[in-house]
Every structure is written in C-alpha cells, then in structure tokens.
Image 1 (cartoon, one colour):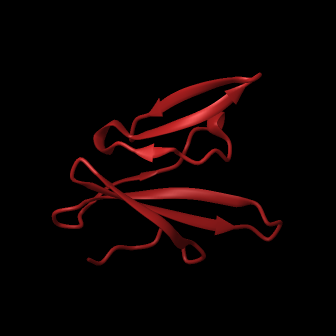
Image 2: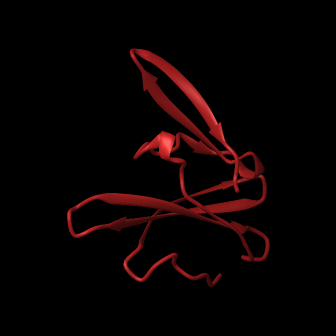
Length: 91
C-alpha cells in the first residue's frame, strides 16, 4: 500500500485499524523540540485517502486513546481532577 506522508519531516509512529479504516499516526518535531501529531486515515481495502486529521486546539498535545473508524478518535482529558472522555469526528 502506497501513501504520502503529511510532510517530509514527518515519521510514522503507529497505526490502528477500525471499521474498515486505517489510521496512521505521524509525528513531526520542530527545531524547538515541540511535537506535533497528525493522523492519515485511509480506506483499509484499497489504501485510498479518506482524511488527514489534526486534533482541535482544545485537545492540545493529548494523544487519542483509540481510533473508532468513522466516528473518529476518543480522547481522555483531565479537568481539575475529573476525567473527561471526548470524541472528535473526522473532518
């Protein structure tokens, strides 16, 4: 399966399969050592692009707990000692 990285300096850091979709996690590290994560989502059957996902600003640097296919990603956030589960749909 061939696909294009979201940037020349991005490297693959993981993948998940759900609901007929493959989510490939790519990481980019800036000169100031800031880490940025993007997810390339492909149709698992034929490798065609479905979406390039970046988390919303609200999520900051939080990594998703899991990939749920068409429903997107499930994130865990700590809000003053309370754990919140947030779902972000693919856009």
